[in-house]
Length: 166
Image (cartoon, rainbow, N blue to C red):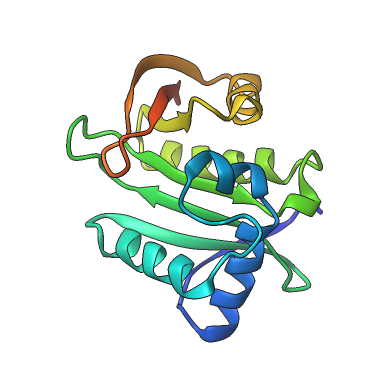
């Protein structure tokens, strides 16, 4: 599964159902984020949250698919954070059935290359403190902790990470 295709989320009913399934396949994240009941992910709540994200200036909500069309991941990218001017990964989620298969690493490579080709020198993200597996993933890819603070929307404790692209 080495070729991934990214496309904007168009919010069709089929896409929203696929994305809700993607969230449901990640109960650890749902519990940690406290935004969705991992046993009953509601498509309309997922859609509302992603529509709000997509309305943010400079934000893109992207679907990652393999050539056969299967949804394997979701990305929310912010071109320039209003505080630091850096690009940020707001969310990177891989279907739970595909964890530890290299999909996340491929998606991160695509994101890093995208911003590198735009001559951006770094990229940031925030990891929820209560998701040690996520922190381990980002650390394994060379990302470094630069701060600890709460997220702006839900006030959850987060680890801010940065990766130098140059």
